[in-house]
Length: 163
Image (cartoon, rainbow, N blue to C red; front, side, top):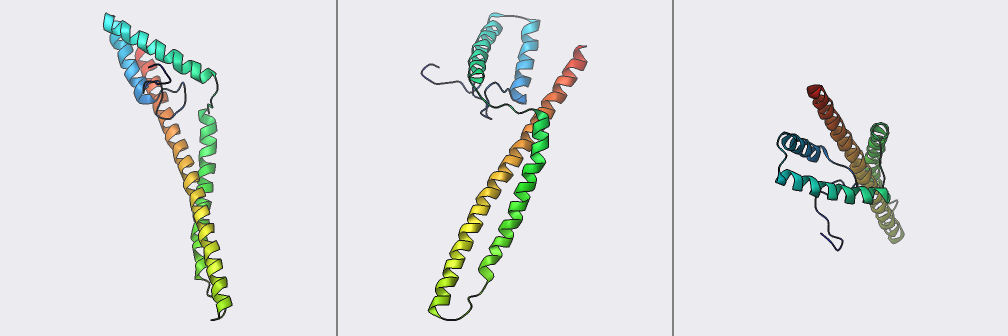
């Protein structure tokens, strides 16, 4: 794992250093329970590997990164969805620009219509890209909120069972 390589567990799917997704956390919780009941050499080796991976991830996180809390995500998600929805409406309206007919049947009007259609195409293409980005960001925030809430619920249930 030297020379810049990293294991899949030290590079989370969402790309955020130090983040452990709910599935990985559930796996770790199961392992913790198993190893707590019967500590063996395999368990010890897994803990050592995990500690080394965690140290690597924490070192990466300490060198910078971005971390957003759940309240910030919940505040931003509807705003990004609103932006995506408005851009979607703008794409729909922008598509109507090409419906405008040329004023006359002469070469100058034909060239003007072609130029206007080209601008309409570029405008709609730009809006579509922006809408795709905004919708993607809104969806990612929604997914992150759901994962957080699922993990929070699992943690609450775990604490209730323990004590």
